[in-house]
Image (tube, rainbow, N blue to C red; front, top):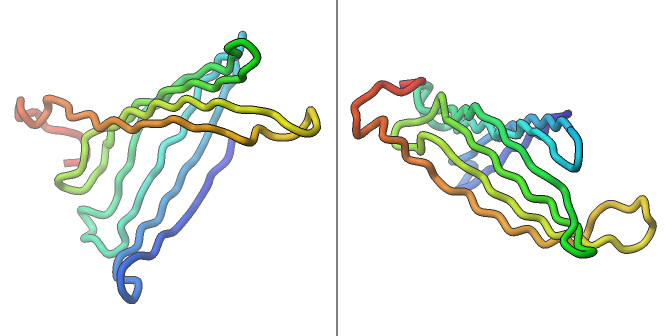
Length: 136
């Protein structure tokens, strides 16, 4: 359990910047399975007050296993952006596959890591059906 906080400045004279807050919670269960909550809340400090925050709500799960001698960490998460600026995606699905190799001491962290990831935007039918969405 923890939180990562970051700020990104871009543009001339710091004209555009965003703050990211990423809380993370993992809960391990049997046979390498785990549940996770790892959203990334984003604030655009130069945007208007109504279009400043992206607040995702959701969760995911994953499993650590071996393919032969190769350790693999596969996980997926799905989020609904309950608060978002106009024109931004309604939700997001994250899929990740990490292939790890361990070298050095047995207690050393996973490195030489190959990460295959894709973030797929989910466009719900909410706009097409003219249903109200949270945060708007």
